[in-house]
Length: 128
Image (cartoon, rainbow, N blue to C red; front, top):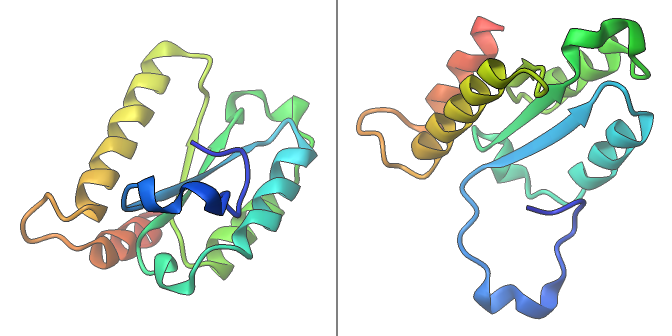
């Protein structure tokens, strides 16, 4: 887990392989969106071929929204990356979201035969 990118380089040799990057955007915080936008510049373009997703939290409280949904939808379109919407304060949704992220990670890491990160990312974008 990291709060922003780029990651510090002093421990590069100890860092495991990165299979999936999930950017978390809290729609109640403009800082959250600005931090994600700034971090995107530090991601290698090859990751946008199925190894990046956006997790948008706080969707159960649209009336407290500080971030315009159009800006969030635009990120998904510009970076060709799937978006997951959730409300982390509800346990059932939190568990289901964690399971979806784990399955995405398994696919991106190559642990699901017959499914590539690129094909899965394309399927996710088309279903949105």
